[in-house]
Each structure stands twice: as C-alpha cells, then as structure tokens.
Length: 326
Ligand code: TXA
Ligand code: MG
Image 1 (cartoon, helix red, strand yellow):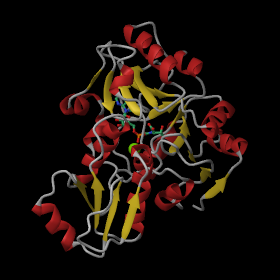
Image 2 (cartoon, rainbow, N blue to C red; image 1 turned 120 degrees about the horizontal axis):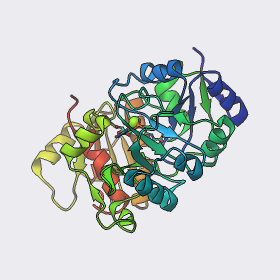
Image 3 (cartoon, rainbow, N blue to C red; image 1 turned 90 degrees about the horizontal axis):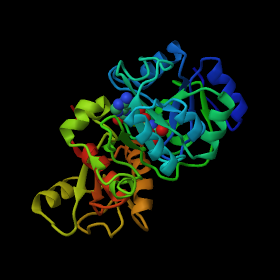
Image 4 (cartoon, protein in one colour; image 1 turned 60 degrees about the horizontal axis):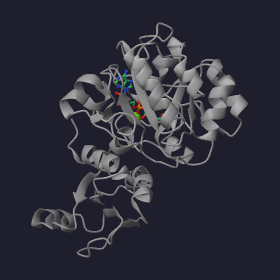
C-alpha cells in the first residue's frame, strides 16, 4: 500500500472516519490512530505494528471536557479529572474505569481505559475534526523506538500505513506519563515529562509503581521497548569501568555517542550527538536510535542522565533499551 503524507487535517479526519489508519503528530511522539468504535480499524493497528494482543491502546480526545465526559463519579474518575485539569492538554495519560461506550478491544480486555488529551495543535485539530475518540499507540513497529517526526514514521511504517499527517516535530520526544488513577491515588506506570514531583502537587500520596506493579497493571511494560537494533550501553562518566571501555573499543568505527558531556576519547566515533541540556537529550534519543539503525551501527553509548525531572523518563527508556531482547 502506498503511504501518502498530507498536511490536510480535514483529509486525514475523513480517512479516519472511513476506517483507515492515520499516523499523526503529538507533542510526545507520533501516534497511529483509528477511530475508537471501528473494530476492524483497531484490529489493523495491532496487525500494522506487530503489536501483542495483550497491549492496550491509549484513547485520545480533543479537549479536557471530552476526556472528563468519559469519567464516572468514582474516586478514580474524580482523581483523573484533577490530573487532567492540572496537566492536560499535555504529555499525560490517565488510566480509569472503562465506560461501556469504549470497546474492551481498545484496552485488550481490561476493565480500565487509558485517556489522553494531546497539546500538539495538529493533534488537537485532527481530534476536533473527527469528533470521536481516536485510539493510538506510538507509530512504530512494536518494540522499536517511537517516531518524533513524519520521516521517523515513514522509516518504520512506509507502505504499511495509508496516511501520515504532517506537522511540527514532537517537542517532548518521549511518550506520555501513564498515571493509574484506579488505586485512588496517582500511581505512575510509565515515566514521562510529568514527573513525580509535579504529581505530588495534586496528591502527596502520588507514587511510582514498582516494576512488579507495572507488570501487573500495564501489560505494555512487559514487552521490550524503545530499542534500536544495536546494543545500548549506559555510560556513567563518574564511574568509568574496564568492562565499558573494552566494549567501546570492540565497536570502534561503528559506535555512536549520545549525551550532554563530551564523548569518551578512546575511539573514533561513527556518530556523536551532544545535547545542550537534558530536554534536548530526551528529544534526541529516539531520533539517534533511528540513525543507528539506518547506518547499521553496532553500539550506542548513552551518557547516564540525571535522575530527576525528564531525566527519570529518559533513564527508564535507556534501561529498557539496554536490556537484552526477550
Ligand atoms: O505519548 C504517548 O502516550 C503516545 C502518543 C501517541 O499518545 N502513545 C503511546 O502509546 O505511547 P503506546 O501504545 O506506545 O503505549 C501505551 C502505554 C503502554 O505501556 C500500555 O500498557 C499503557 O499505555 N496502557 C494503555 N492502556 C492501559 C490500561 N488500561 N491500563 C494500564 N496501562 C495501559
Ligand atoms: Mg509504544
């Protein structure tokens, strides 16, 4: 199937309403959308991405009011509306009881659903034009880095998706913070740009789920994610060690470096991306992974980011990418 790239929001909305998949920009990463009440289109999302059936999708709506209309009067619903009113539109997703209007197919059979109101103007315009909720995972093949530009979507899904809606690059560059509201206090299932400190302004009991809790509550976290084809090494300049040095030397000529500080000097790097700050670093991560794939590099060395702010989400993605495939 030829993939068409368009900047025409109305055309993209019409394609979605006709049951076609449309990749579209959001401020976090690009999404691969289908209208939520079209079971065939939903099935096509899983097929197109090679996504495991047990991995639920996020439902995107145009406004905070639209999201609140899908909440019930339970403690979880009230908490979610507080989170949304404080942080949305923006890079957060709330997990709440699933209303009967949303098919269990969207949430892989769970009795909860994930809701998000993106702030990217093109996403907001598209969702307003569609007038119905749009289910969308990130627009990459399952397990691969999420795209932050239209070119990134093409690299992963050219010929597999009929439409890509063009728009400005994703400013955050990492996926949304997924916040489970069902326990009655906010629990972070996936780290993102909205961190624990910010959530604690809403509830002092806000917390980050343990690895086991995440596995139990968010099936998507079971699968390997965000990884380029090559090996990823997290390098801490403060604690140099022989094992890292040996690995870097073994990949001389086909290794990439990504970080804020300077690249270690032992070898000639095939690619060096130095970022001005941790936000630029978060934004560059998936794009650099994609270039490593394109240039068939064999090692990506990433400087260990600070364990605060967006650095927490960045470190989470780096840890997942550096794990061996399952
Ligand atoms: O920033 C984002 O969230 C992007 C853009 C496109 O909105 N979307 C995204 O979708 O990252 P995806 O499918 O790649 O990741 C969705 C995550 C998965 O970890 C999944 O397990 C979790 O959200 N999730 C979805 N529904 C859930 C639910 N009902 N309960 C718990 N976790 C859920
Ligand atoms: Mg994803």
